[in-house]
Image (spheres, rainbow, N blue to C red):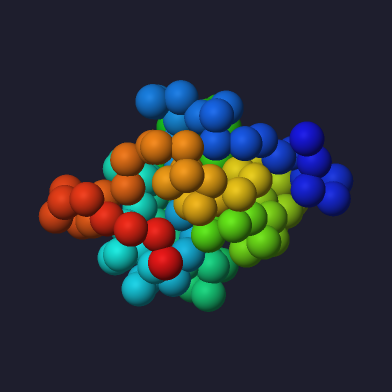
Length: 114
């Protein structure tokens, strides 16, 4: 599946050890996110790009998520231009939640997707 010409997968393609980058804004993240995901808001992404390169295991695919897939598609395009193996997650956190995957807050409590 492709979002334009970007590599795109559904949430069902993500395994327990998949490296997830969440590019939603802080209020969305705080309401609920995928456990273990790295959070760098799209609005701060270029300035904080180094956090991703430090956190992502070398050669690992980076699964980029937002709420539904629009912002993550933009960040995926940027990452591909930087030579990073990135994939847009179609449906984003809305699909993640809809398929019964856990959504948590920073404290580990059950969260919700805004």
